[in-house]
Length: 125
Image (cartoon, rainbow, N blue to C red; front, side, top):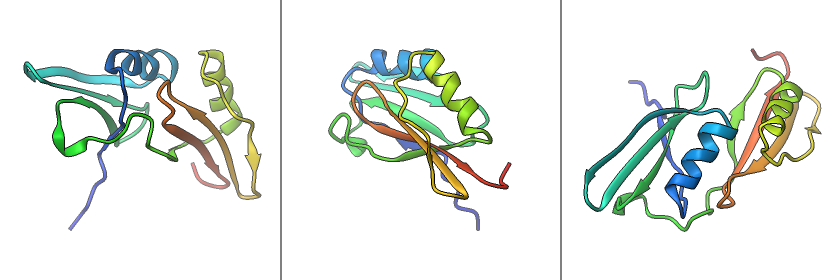
């Protein structure tokens, strides 16, 4: 049996601000932005090339977390220097590349303080 991780809730204070950041600066694709009721909003976004998406939600009791409390989401890339430069060029404040030998990392935060890490693994495409 497969267990596919396909959706990760990301806690934010302002869905429109976060949606704009993830689309315009980080380059995620908008899958949908729906309001199934007056109190619920679901925004789903997917990183380029990924089978896993994020969800920004409002009025969804099952995924309530303090805004900015998510740590260490990883985006795996083939070339960290290129990925870092691309995001920095779009205005994403990027940390420096840390080279740990066969793995390299560079981090950033969304407007709420949720942390993300670019990861390059040597020999992995």
